Every structure is written in structure tokens, then in C-alpha cells.
Length: 97
Image (cartoon, rainbow, N blue to C red; front, side, top):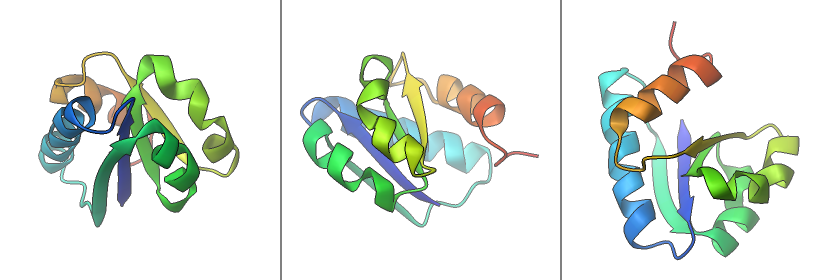
């Protein structure tokens, strides 16, 4: 699973969210092959190279092109909540059986 985490500046928020994603995926026993965090500009241009993108909810629409190419884009309200991320992965994907 290749995962991209993207926020406005690509530093603080995306780094915290990346750690939450790693924790959630570990608890769900979903292997991560590659995970990166980046700013929105880079994220938009590189999103098609990933299986799943996590971003704050207010930026989800910026990844419509990636969604059209089959990339799963998940908006997160609380970027520090591995529980919210686990909930989205369970409800919005077929990764957890």
C-alpha cells in the first residue's frame, strides 16, 4: 500500500497525520509499502502514484483528478486521531475484512 499524506504546507500537520496513519494501519494489520507527507501542490501533482491519499477534509476536492484515476482520497477532521483514520479505512475501503 502506497500512502500519501498531504496538507497545506507539508510540514507540521501532514507529519502528525502521517504518524496517525501509520499507527492506524499498524493496528489494522495493513502493510504500508511507502508513505510520504507533502504540501498540497506536490500532493496534487504526485497523488496518482499512490493508492490512497489522506488530507484534511477542507482539501479533499483538490484531489479530484487523482480520484478520477482511481486513487482513494480520504478527508480527516482530526489529523491526530488514529481512531478517526481507522474508522474511515473500515468504512471507505475494502482493506479491512
